[in-house]
Length: 54
Image 1: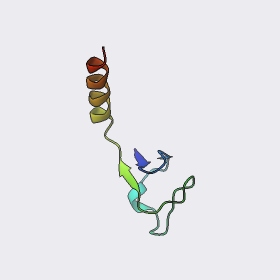
Image 2: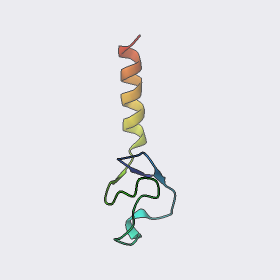
Image 3: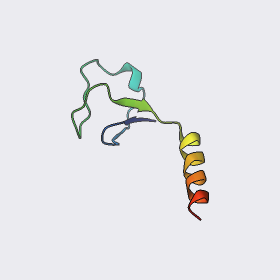
Image 4: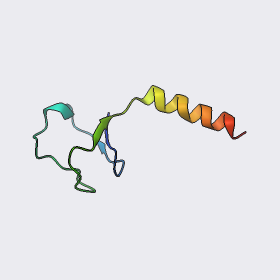
């Protein structure tokens, strides 16, 4: 899953790497701000943060 690192918009197309070079985020109009989300790492960080706040 690809997500805009500026506003959090998630790209819902099939293959983000094949989109045209002039693609901009439909919410914030940012260019080149997308990153591939690693859900496993995000879950691990959230669990660690939760445990630290208990």
